[in-house]
Amino acid sequence: MIKTKKLTKTFDKNEVLKGIDVNIKQGEVVVVIGPSGSGKSTFLRCLNLLEEPTSGTIEFEGTNLTDQKTNINELRQKMGMVFQGFNLFPHKSVLDNLTISPIKVKGETKEIAEKNALDLLDKVGLKDKASSFPSQLSGGQKQRVAIARALAMNPDVMLFDEPTSALDPEMVGEVLTVMQDLAKDGMTMVVVTHEMGFAKEVADRVIFMAEGIIQEEGTPEEIFEQPKNSRTQDFLSKVL
Ligand code: ADP
Ligand code: MG
Image (cartoon, rainbow, N blue to C red):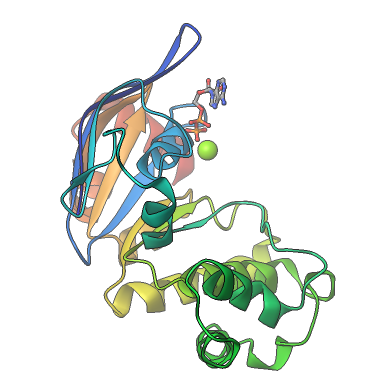
């Protein structure tokens, strides 16, 4: 579904991604781990062209994204993204947060968008919050709304950039549970996280990134139980 070849990204003289080759299959859950500053967010942002790659190619569902002719807006509809901060529209109700893009961008009718939104809110356990405003929600609830909002566009893949890092510890679990359910439903997911328990349990594949390259990748068992690379070993000894 997503294939990058020799993907690089340089900011001024800082080469942040130094040639990333990945191949993500439909329905696969790929968890990206690695130290802060290693290029994880930049990698995710390149996948949906929030950052313009410096060189290399990204193929998504058979389309070369680095081709000038690619319609970026169409592409973004197919890639849902959830960030560390919740980025909800503060002056809109939860329901409106979920329906605004499907109505405006996809041309859905209000009725259909609202029905779909309520189904999604039900899925993330927040149907009763449809008429609340973001300021009335806890961090965990906001992040679940953010996930439902991304899903409302019916994306083919979901990208998560440290979705639980800004949450109080007691709210991390409810967000990870929603993500786990999504994985069970067969969603293709790329997840940057420091939640090693989630990586172990939910990932089909774990990628360890450091200094702008993939140092090692494998199944959770391979990475967590028998890491080969000394950098992976060193990183895991600090976080586990
Ligand atoms: P991670 O998500 O692994 O912590 P990032 O991808 O956020 O790492 O950042 C990797 C490096 O790229 C850092 O040195 C950071 O300062 C740099 N960087 C990220 N975004 C920008 C930007 N927009 N402009 C300049 N430098 C950036
Ligand atoms: Mg980051």
